[in-house]
Length: 363
Image 1 (tube, rainbow, N blue to C red):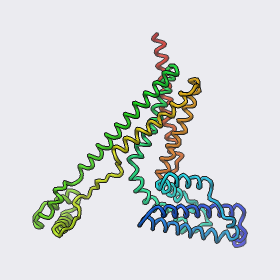
Image 2 (spheres, rainbow, N blue to C red):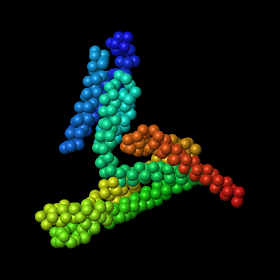
Image 3 (cartoon, rainbow, N blue to C red):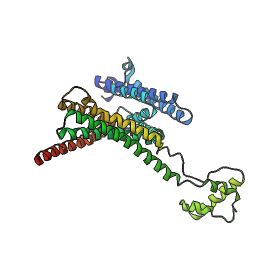
């Protein structure tokens, strides 16, 4: 009975197998595309991943037989995500591939081999490791960009709605919005520069003095305090003594083993100038979105509703991008961003109405 069912799969089963086949082919193609952009070990790893996806592809081809033709396409959403990833760079590709590997349906599908489900989970960890370096390199500027755009959107939308709630005219709303945009963008840019530079300076203070490195060759291997450096870093006495002797001997022999174990690149912190520029530009872009409708000949109510809709879409997109790059489902992050933005705007609108009511009662 089981054999007969296997030999004559239902249309739904064939459709599911063809979907799996299309997804495996898309993933294999994506890994090969990434490999062409890389060199060395990273390229080899990506090519190995593509070969693993080809093994999975062969499994579904074997089950489908003649039903594998015509060649199936991956689901529309998967194709759209792949296209966006190819446009926006490697980090988007890797983040989307990590998400794709982790959401595998093979765990509960008896048509897939247990080894295939295990492969997908391990692939997710491989891609996570590859993506970690890219996330680290972009985290400083990316944080400034996301924070700047989000803050620009929320603060300006809240400011505009607060002024609307106070019952002022359209000209005053536009003036307040422009002032908020300029003041906020300049403040964000300056704040990001000071914040990042201060963080880099604090981290650089953890690095060793270059004079200490140049003095290693002159130390007495029998009596020296170099082992105290390693003890201060957490090594036990014997390990510290052994490392100190090895480092001195290497230096006396002309070697260049570094004394400092602390990286001075700080890619995860980023550049102060890049963070400032990124924050300024993205704050300005975010702040312009809720202000934009008020520049047209619309009445205040229509412009306010339009501003809310545009701001909501932008906040949703920002949250979704953060979710994708974090390797998690984008919708919860997008909804979180949307709820925070709309919550702030609602509070300032109500405060504006309260302010208007208070002014009227005083008069």
